[in-house]
Image (tube, rainbow, N blue to C red; front, side, top):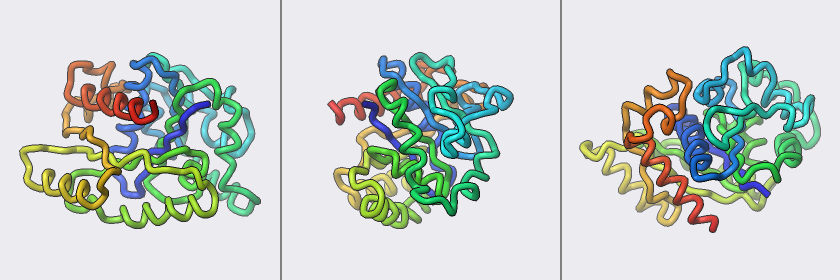
Length: 254
């Protein structure tokens, strides 16, 4: 049975997709079978793994709507052991399609049941919102990983997200746990980065990953080549950080 991790934060630009793509690639490099589900209409995780828009004609939209079984929507990627269910811009319309249907929060959970035994990890890249697609992801997930940018507004909205997690636990998924808070875009030379890091660790003791994702030019460049960081530059600080994160997650679940 796979471990399903939703990567979510309603704040944009915090490193959700970067984490989804590169954590997936790192787990794949450590010989785990990984399925990445792109649940963001911007489809950046899809392009970040080298899938072109004309290859992603079907994906998460059809998955949530129940038009196609999950196995028919899975595409191979050039990252070892990593597959993807891609997204395209049409995904934004799926919320309107299912809004008045009963048990609409459980559609993704139900759709992923058929492939749960085919993968060790299913990683869901959520949109920067707390809409119905993200709610589906949190209902389907075993745990949530929250990337937090090491900048001034980092904690803004985090309380709201944690309240949403609590509501999802109460109403839809009592087994949902917090996998961890991940500090991203960390620059040890900046006092602000260190202050935010200290504040998050003090505030949320025991919930923060030891691993920190440092600000790294290679991490920013890799998506424009449709490559994960391990393929783009395996010797970079970014690749090292995500491999360490993958090992930390594996150690936690051992």
